[in-house]
Length: 249
Ligand code: 13P
Image (cartoon, rainbow, N blue to C red; front, side):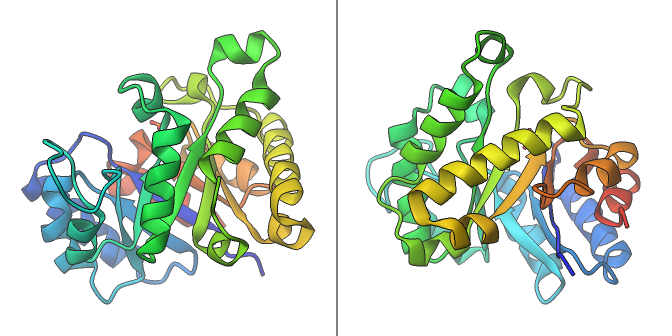
């Protein structure tokens, strides 16, 4: 049976006390959940949340990472610091990093390779803006983000990579891609992965959907052949919203 990867990206929300409360509630309420689970609190709460989820079925994720191991990089957080805190997964190339903070494919690729070399799992986010979609550029954008983002990544490391398709126009807007539309883009992602790594790798890779995932649309999205999980933003901030998504079946 397919095991889905349901992840919560808390973005810039939660003080340490709030993060601890939410993580504790999720740990209790999701103890019987068989899906692969991850939560990514803000950096400041990683240490506290790490202690809570340690030994549970919830993996600790980080929302970003610097492109170097150490050095003069004011404001950046290193892969070594994340590993030190028990982080297992890092979200890279999120559209908010790309579009608000100007991260390009080259920088994202550097982070991807660094994280994988340290045996962290990577969630590589891809997705088009509304303008790109309306100008017929969807496939070009996705192909570029995948091929540039994964440049230099060996087939043997691909097992530690999850792709998250997050159409920018669906993030935090309440507008979800229809399950059919999302499935079609996921199938296209698989096609690009097949061209890069072969059919078996394309079949095996986990592709999450992200963008206004809620309890009432999760099951329909997850029912699609090419959708293997969800990267949840807003609805991951409260247990009563996130638990039913993780327990969609
Ligand atoms: P929302 O679920 O709030 O639309 O955010 C999606 C997202 O960006 C997850 O990374």
